[in-house]
Amino acid sequence: MSTSSNRLVAIVGGSGAGKSWLVEQLCRVLGENACWLGLDDFYRDRSHLPFARRAQLNYDVPQAIDWAEAARVLADGRAGRETRVPRYDFATYSRHPELRRWQARPVVFVDGLWLLRDPQVRALFDLKIYLDTPTELRHDRRVARDAAQRGYAPTEIRERLATMVQPMHAKFVEPQRRWADLVLSQPYCEPEVELLADRLWGLCSASGAFPCWMRETFRAELLSLLIQHEFAS
Image (cartoon, rainbow, N blue to C red; front, side, top):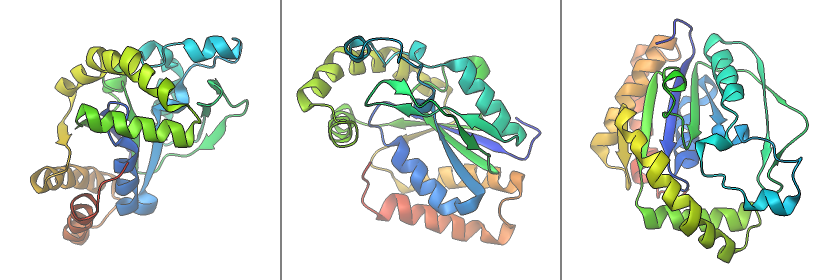
């Protein structure tokens, strides 16, 4: 557990598990007290390779991430230091040439496929959440996202799902649930969300983000967002 005022929360799950959607809702509840960092921006730059070669690489393995750079940024976030973060372009399989400036807030949500595998990286987090999402649902979301946001052809997406994404999920992503403090299943159920609210409130209280009298309001808002609203990633 860090002695700094910032608290880091890992949101881990397979591709299409709903990590981004969940972080968006949590940041909505916490407002200016929270921020979001994505492991996807730490994919290694492949701009030195021909585009056709880049497109053939397996990006669903932990080795695709620049872990030294990710650990540096996470450490800066815990310490409250302003830092610079890379930006990754999935359409070109390469990084943008310029880093963006980033300043952590009291609660930092970090989403990614493999945040819990390495003990040193895992130790940086004050709360570790794993999203248990049915395979078919994950795959449907992946197809819709990659076609709409990244310009991939549906046939290409489904081939990658069958040959790379799902086998690598079983090998590298799914085993991480053993290290999670909380496992959230979908669709979300009220007892799990209440437990999530309690754990997050503990972090908020430790960081001084909210006064004690707001606890019930915080819980009610979180329940409303995750239970009453239709889930869509």
